[in-house]
Length: 210
Image (tube, rainbow, N blue to C red; front, side, top):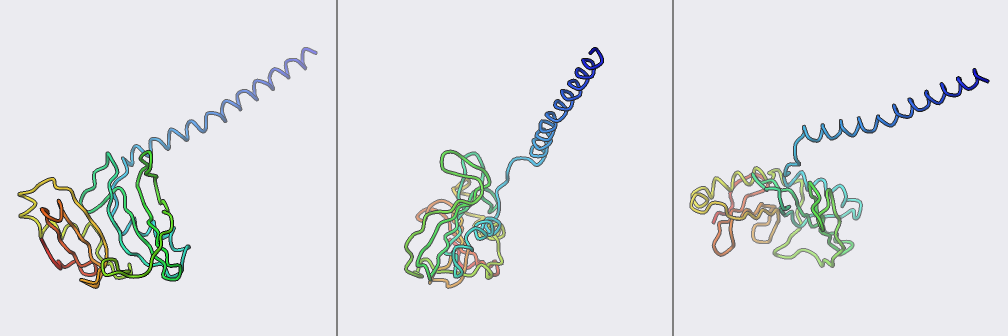
């Protein structure tokens, strides 16, 4: 009986030790993951084309004839957009066959209550086709990313920016009947009192400044 009792106690001890050893593994893994994230630093704003392809990957399965109408830089509180990159972007995709358009959103982090990390898909909206102020374009024609367009725009607006620092920036990729090619519209301030630069998205040249 004594031997049986001792064997039972020894077996229980082994089980307890094994259990403790197993339960400690997730803690170690979690700590490693946390350290890795800390080493990587906080999420950084991304360029327009980077965000676009994230959204397009989700959008392309909804229609074979999908075309982009615009790509717009947005802000997330607490994260500064800079150098032509943004913490959040929206893209509007349209389908001629479905006569619908949807707004997709890509955000690098979540921000309660209505900003979610990754890609968010909006509800379908009626779309009757191209308009003079919103024409579909091919992303294959866009060789100039938002950061490069921003750099070109800053060079053009240099004198104005020195006199008007810290103005709010708006950054949009679009096509209209006026220019009939995809272009980046970079504007500081407002349409009435700001400075706007139109940058050709195919070669980076300045189409119009001020």
